[in-house]
Figure (cartoon, helix red, strand yellow):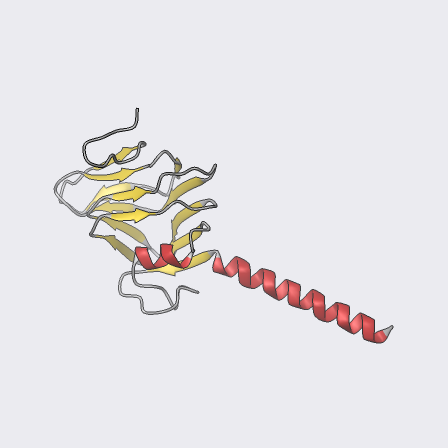
Length: 165
């Protein structure tokens, strides 16, 4: 009987540790110049693309723990679960180029839960890709004196002059 109880205790402990590891993998930390593995604010990845890739298309949370710059067209591909872009420790999104969300065939939500700073003098876009997109109260859009503007479009970007009606 004692052997059975020890075996059950070991199994339960393994399940708890596995659950903790799985939920930790659903959150990735990022800031410009980060060189870590994204597992914590002390070890952030260095680009938004790297952080999104670390979620393996499953959805989850990307935490900006410093400035995160979008200087090239960036696409967040379709996710199989909800996706949140949030901030800690003064993190913010410095948007200087288009950010587009992959067309969603799932019923999940993209949430922007961090300040966005426009870094260009011309309009910059977020394309929603037919996703459910939520902007929280923390998503305050400002500019750094460059007078850039953020434009949000809910549809998908059409290729080669074609569009879906």
